[in-house]
Image (cartoon, rainbow, N blue to C red; front, side):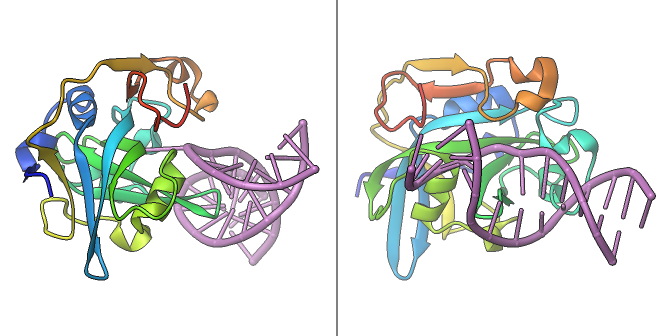
Length: 186
DNA sequence: TGCCGGATCCTG
DNA sequence: AGGATCCGGCAA
């Protein structure tokens, strides 16, 4: 396996826009049943904090979004539409309520299913709500910088599925690797 | 306590 | 275009 360096707390404890773009091209790693599943992150969305009307944190801290208000470098995993999970990484300082949604992966190792979309990638990586609040600086679910990461060209577009958020729906907070075939939507 | 609306995905 | 399918959040 290619050499990789696990991302630690200081990586996540930065401006959400910066973290979102820096996550493109990194490896999401999950050890499950003695096997290491790896996907390369090719698409993300930034949710900037409680002032961001599209963010789950915009209505204040609740039982569901509590992890978003916790320390950076933890997984915020929630159930969407009753049947899929979505995974975010918490960013910035505690109480900020910011996170980056992982929207698509390119398969690298032991990926049995499709990974184009936030619900599909969680299924393929076997990530569910039991991992909500999981510390991403641990050894079983983490994100790592591959030693050989190539330079990526980044596209910025409006986020998907947040039409309810008024002007916030139009802000270009979805980032993906230009021309990557595993991006969920053009 | 009941109801409504999802940061989705699949099928027709 | 519409349905599946669960649950958190808020109104009552």
